[in-house]
Length: 155
Image 1 (cartoon, rainbow, N blue to C red):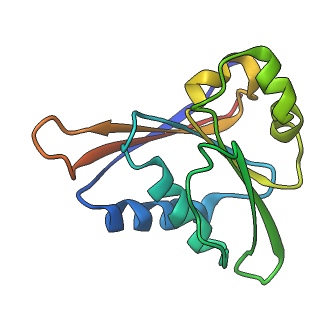
Image 2 (image 1 turned 180 degrees about the horizontal axis):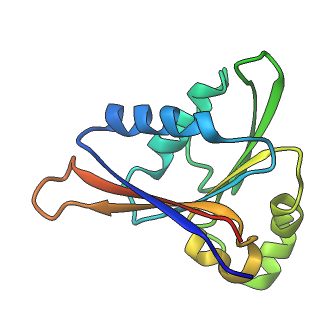
């Protein structure tokens, strides 16, 4: 089976622009989708997730679940239908046992929520290949500027 990739490049110059891009990106998301985020500390991953959650009218304060590992948010889509979002931060996960303990595989393969995974590079083979990958590349000269590469893999 052939893998099809679609890639888009965006540049943002502030947290607000990154949030807005996340909000706009969320228009294409559906229940069951997975979004894998790649990038270093402070790259903008959580700001992008805030935009996605804004799009889905999540009333909670959205923050990185670095210590809780996983947050669940309840929102609604443009039709007023309920949408569940799982926001996972793998920064502190270092072993297969920890993946098992948090129920990561079960979370990834459930079709009743949108899954948003920060530090996805730690997930190795734990995520389906069919997903969105969002890579954050910080500018060397301007700390507020970042290039955001969004790829959709349809394998």
